[in-house]
Amino acid sequence: MKSAVSSSLFFHSKNLLKPNPLSRLESVFLPKPSLRSIVKLPSSSTTSGLRSISSSSMASSFKPEQARVPSALPLPAPPLTKFNIGLCQLSVTADKSRNISHAKKAIEEAASKGAKLVLLPEIWNSPYSNDSFPVYAEEIDAGGESSPSTAMLSEVSKRLEITIIGGSIPERVGDRLYNTCCVFGSDGELKAKHRKIHLFDIDIPGKITFMESKTLTAGETPTIVDTDVGRIGIGICYDIRFQELAMIYAARGAHLLCYPGAFNMTTGPLHWELLQRARATDNQLYVATCSPARDSGAGYTAWGHSTLIGPFGEVLATTEHEEAIIIAEIDYSILEQRRTSLPLNKQRRGDLYQLVDVQRLNSK
Image (cartoon, rainbow, N blue to C red):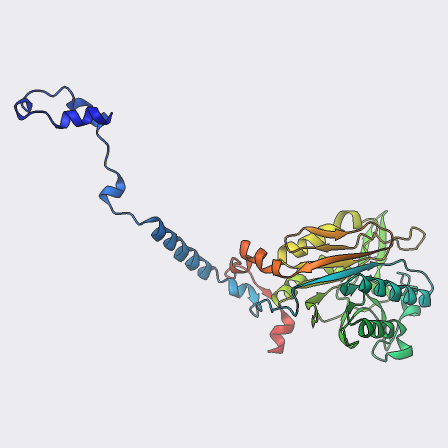
């Protein structure tokens, strides 16, 4: 095609007045001028810059920083990047002394296998029932003989130099009872206390009915704590259903969310893993849960399946319903990788919605 066009362009001058048999082919053979030859288009590097400017301008107009009120805190540098967590899925009996001794041995075993953080189940020192809560409740603030469960946690955490998320136990404060999780640092000191915020009041006809509010009082404060193994947000069982709490913890710079919980045989198969993966994926952080082992003869039968979820929603470690100690690695360097690949914090629409952290807002 190219040679035919060239011959038509170099006819001798004497032939110019004669009809050119190829002239009618010019529209076919002559290359059409490109748009770039008429109008100078920006180079690929320039267009890339324009896209970047456009994307930046768009993000600015979306006001992602205003999607959290107050603005989200940056993810803090953790004290260490990698460590092992131990999830102690324990059997629970009506013998409180046995439960305490059994939990102590499990913590020691987890530490001997390299765990720097140990998580216990919800209500590990008592049967899970409204009748049992008042009987097994302890005065945590009084300590000592008034709270043998937390006294054990304090002693073990200091001796083994580990951080313990102490599951939960019934707590007595005056005439009120709470479902309370205690966090002990590697120095044996009580670093935080989370009282279950959302009480487990459900009625699924023909399946399960339970009303924690018959005996327990709801907590009033989200709990996030800086430890030797990073910044941790705490929830207890039913708290995991409320994504707003997890979002608040993420906005406060949490690396990890821990939920001691005892889902049942109705909601456990459907929702237990689903909710963990959702909280981890939405907030791009780690989620760890710990359940009691299943006792089919108990008044309340736990689902089990204690689990560690990664920031991409992946199941990193789990177990079935029997007693077990899970040892799994947490690597905080992955948090930044995931958030760079999926920059959700920079893509939120503060011009359309906001999550208000009432506690932080009122503390200003």
